[in-house]
Length: 296
Ligand code: ADP
Ligand code: MG
Image (tube, rainbow, N blue to C red):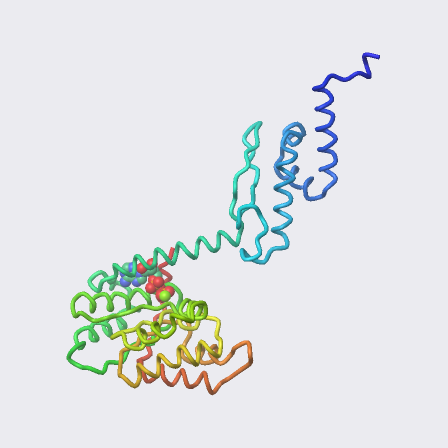
């Protein structure tokens, strides 16, 4: 008789064990327990939370990006961290979240850096940059003396300092010569214009008229016929007609940019792409800057 009768705690322990055995029949659950290298007792005590983690990991395995995240805290998995004989659950960012955080942080850092970029701080030790630096100095000296100055199409390798160098010139001209300048990250320009139609007119007017404009990273955008022809094309045409300096940076040579601009999801349009390229050629001198990647 004694042998059959269970105390309450024994009964609970038995139920816990049964629940756990049931969970272990799920392949993902068993894999998770194995990966954590925890003993049965610890796993049993955390059964339901481990199940939650498992559910979240299953969501992740079918996920293509933050836009479709189904987890409790978007972009995160409540993942167990084992510390001797206890398990803590911590919100851990997924690969998409990490990528987004990194991109955002880089953008913030580079914006701050760009605001402070000045010509006197330009590092001149790298011989590959001397041609550009000389060009920028000449532009600076001639500004106000000559009223139709071409900008640069500065293309080359990632992190070689293209944006930084032009930003330094623009800041210098703002501070010392009261020029009105603007730096626009092209992929963002085209994305935002789509999101906010009501701002388009004001923004276009501003970008068409600002004294000096840098269109940063042209070629990194997803090309749409509308972005290329109505936004870029219109801004460039206006600035050309009014002889306003326009700079570009790109990872593409001008020929590569032409190929890039000709492809949209609606097919190929070489004529329209060529039209943009012709305007860029009118507006700029072409310099290549291939150098070490200064981004860490
Ligand atoms: P790119 O536009 O060619 O991809 P960036 O202009 O963003 O490259 O430069 C990469 C990094 O190097 C940035 O962090 C930038 O601040 C830094 N940098 C570039 N040129 C200089 C310079 N002359 N002096 C100091 N830092 C520089
Ligand atoms: Mg850049």
